[in-house]
Length: 592
Image (tube, rainbow, N blue to C red; front, top):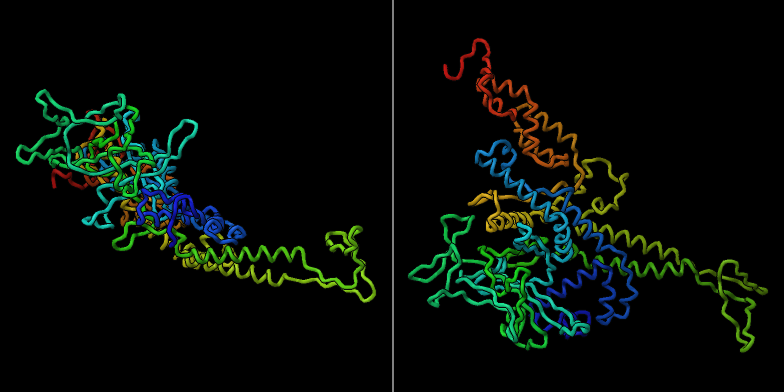
């Protein structure tokens, strides 16, 4: 990777497009190396780089096992969208915070079901665990009436940082770029496609202009009868500064002067010169793409004040860094040692299965044409005739093969420990070797730490993703979505290791019975350990509807028939229903 990269030459020749800046080229090289390890092709990559023994390298899937195990533990048994406070939000839509939270939770879960969110998470998280980075994008689909979630390969992602933006923060302009190969059948030349999201000041209204003659599709300003520019409906311009402001549905009363623009264009590779890179492409050579609804994607105003892009990192980035670290980054030397040992074991097993023979005094057959002795072929049923004093010695290499296997086991233990997945997590620890459940919990401690760190790096990213989904629904003016700031939503991961559900259930029963745990907290605890509770709010309501003893205590304490009926999930009481009778000797609340 330290050698200069030339296009079409060496293992990274396909990455050496002139449009890739040097600072990004090394990152793309790293992604390719990591993908080669994951797909058992590191030896082939080394061979293209000049290692003659690369094709003999034995790769038996250890990197893929590490990545797959880490991905499974990260995702856990389930993934649920939870809005804090939604447990007590069942009942009539009285506009309370709990009801709003429950309604938002139901709407986000319905969106996740329609967008196949678990599948998208698998796609993105697989790339994040393997390469250290993953990317989500959101786009409003007018036909579907909802935001559409897509995942991008991290090798296509090019965030643009400047001197005034800390690398640890998200920039105001990002690109997705990749090459499109030439197609000899249609005569299309090799091209570069780039999609750009950028934040900028709100401008006047524009309209698409279709292609005509030699003119390519583009956008132009909308002008009024007086020749002046026209503002988009709902925008206002300051008469002094001329700045255009817009009020977004999620921030009423707080006008903003920022919006997000989308540009999607293609360039012929032959039009790009040495001075051009992904951050600096010639605008006069761009061919802007046209959306299905006729909109030309040249600085298209998306009417949101944020970039609908979420960049995931597998680990918490170091200070001033923007990129994450893959799971296998700290154990790649161990993986190389395992591959080398497996290669040696494969060679040693050949001599063990077909041992070398040293024969003296044998009557060898001769070639009828040359008269030279023929080599002795050893196979089942072969009979070797020995003369007087002849002997045969077998070269036994089984001891060396056993030593190599022991070394492999030693390296696998080092791999499990250094990767923090542990032998228990990788499934190489025999159940008979675990003396107790407490010992198993201690053995899984490094795995718990690893999963906790990976989920911590993603927690605010998924909260941001769900926040963007809600705001896109608001921007799309979908019926039923409230205005103003929405309650925060978060992604809750299921347990990554087996849990003691019986102990948790016993703890919940005792806590609720003693009055030290609320029913909402108890339901969340049960859902966290894997009980099949899809909707915590609905579960709380069902429990309360069957809790007649609690309803009786509520009636005794308040004497309020309406409160009791609401607690049980019943409708308003009719005039024919009498008041709840008071216990003898206890005054009503109005008499106290």
